[in-house]
Length: 385
Ligand SMILES: CC(=O)N[C@@H](CCC[C@H](N)C(=O)O)C(=O)O
Image (cartoon, rainbow, N blue to C red; front, side, top):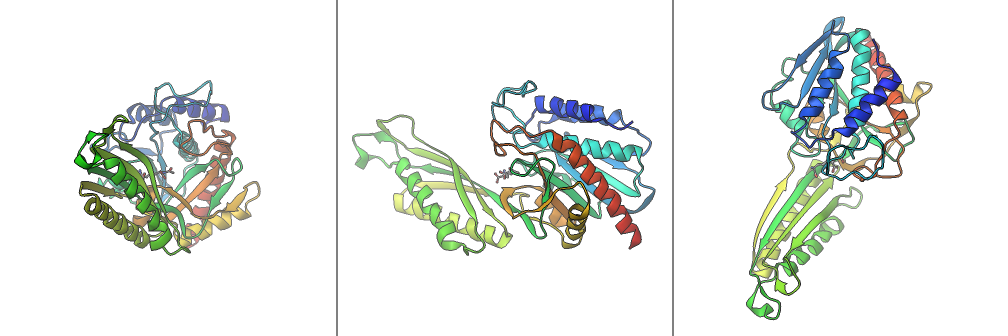
């Protein structure tokens, strides 16, 4: 059987209702297994990973085994309270598929279902990967060795994009997404009475200086043609208005389109933190964590073929996009396996990670059609080589 559009929509709505954070996607894993177990099993083989129990790999045995193509979807959600008002909104308080990984999973299931009943020319490896938003699920999966026997020769994945028209396919040759590095810093000073600042060491002042000085990293240390991002999204200091804060904490992110630039920005953030500690006579504990969030660098050969197919095939709206400062741990997989990441338009007025993000679900069918068509075309290209 092949899944009909109403069934795909129902799968999407059920996934949307059960968002789970990275490494906790147990219900999602079970749901995926149930859906896949109803497909034609003739060509399917499965792998799970003891150390990453929510991951699931499915091989579709091809007619030939001389090439292997990987297709990856992420499966985790975000710690966000949903405010879409949808009838099938999240059933779990404080959890939401606000990054559209439920769309990614549904499209992956649609493609898998198609090839489960139309045996592919070569082996296909479907990777249902946990924890894209944090904990570097892609890197953990790769390092687990699960792919060693099933290593794809090339790999593909997409991210949904609320700014593109429904079903549009976007990509580029080169770096699609940024490499990211998390910033976490704790400042320790001395709390005291608001009336006696000279007898205390105010971490509200120190952390303010840190946040302001970080603004010089992109403006003064980065080649303006290359660009970069340093965002501090979370600052806390002290507890009340008449007590000097003895402790402050910040969380943020560094983003750049090259790894060289990312390392340069990390070095500047470290120097600024040390400088603030010296200036304000406090202790600072700084953690910079990049993990597997390397820049997403599309391979020239696969991406040229992908873009040619998408731009020349009737019925596909292909848009050559600019690089974006979003991060993706698919960057790690692309640093090991050549391949292509692309966008799928879902036309929503609300951005990724918004509590109101509600993708246009018509994109599901269009995404499945575009990608099954491309894979069939890719098999022909590879067979002719
Ligand atoms: C597509 C997307 O929104 N990805 C996330 C990836 C987060 C990486 C890491 N946890 C970090 O915060 O640097 C993004 O925020 O871009």
